[in-house]
Length: 150
Length: 417
Image (tube, rainbow over all chains, first blue to last red; front, side):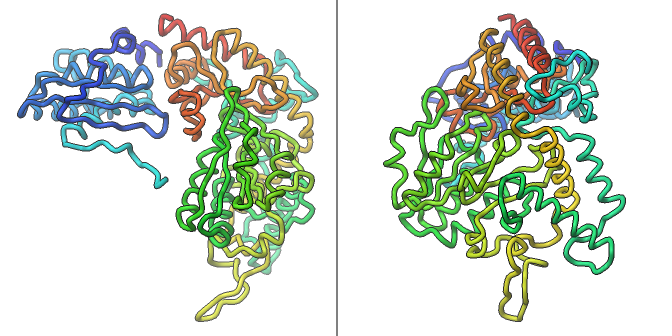
């Protein structure tokens, strides 16, 4: 394993200069979730216009993998039909599970995250934003996972 | 890094200690393993591995049940470990030590068998903001069931307990003060004698979370005068699922059982049962016999080193680590004076997220913890989502601290800082 498998240029670029990292108070859909194992937290905002994802943004804090994945995700789904976005979420998860090996033509910059598959413990970092997006698209209100009674 | 190059620190012969730990001679990729995560779990010396293995190979039987030689041997070895553990923590009576699978189970035992029976609405449980989740959540649940209230001692900016207002937090309403002996993220050693005295003065019992304390600092419960002490075996060179709970005998005798089943009973009738004597009242079902026997070997090992020497070694390596981390530009969370802290050192290195740092350090063979360390109250107090944590034990060397700092510089390179 080499570190440049995971810390590719494009990942570091999205980490240092995240795209669409802002709150969208008027978004129709939003969802927050944290990763209870590591303390990463993320909120995804979706401005949906009928069946089309018009705009997606996120806020939160986390490692370079979770933040760059969120940043790339916002670009990848903007302007797409909701059904396409959901299909991409599915395919992205398949890629991160090592069950799908898309080309750059199919997946664009997102293929940069393929290297994370070799670091199983970090896969959840890459998938976190996508889980939150799916919940938002499904109309989830976005309670933090596993809240305690007090 | 070869064994011969190790610098001996304190009065421990660290090179000799390292030779007892087979895992320390393995590599990660092509790099020697630099294990800096003993606060999560310690590595095991060959003596402990052998003790557990030898039990299975030559003495395995259920304890406190059979009437044949093997069963007698197994029972004697299991009880011998209890006597060792009691002696190790300064408890005069081995019956005051209940075997459990660690601090989490021990805390839950007290939360169920004591707190739910003893607390009522309006009573208070005092915790601190530096508790591990395992010394918070069981009390939240017990408070929920009894109507008691959980309160917290806040922290200073330096990672110490803010005790100036202790008088208003510890009141006659306080029935239990559950406090860590050593913070697993900040490293802080709270002033236990002062806290025990203040709690007893208002009639509160004191539970000391010994997960990080007992492996690293000499402990004497008789002198400390605490009412409960939770003990983790796997953090003190012992096998996983070994550990125990110390409690004053009259408390154990007054408590209801926690887990129920075989062996913890005296007599069973159709409509009721009566309980075995302490500590067996709390040891239902087949226990982790081989693991507790392994813990006995771990105690032998630590006593062979001497806990004063263990503590001195850790003070020295912790001071060196803090100095080097600060020099390298890291932010260290927790006190920097090793007189009031142990060897769990939380830090943030420049702008590298702890997760990224842990992945990059792993490429250099350096194993650290990254995350919230089951200390979300601490993370929130200091405004960070997570920290990186290096933690030290008897086998760590200053050379390994150097390897850590060199790896940090590599991480800086990856992120182009």
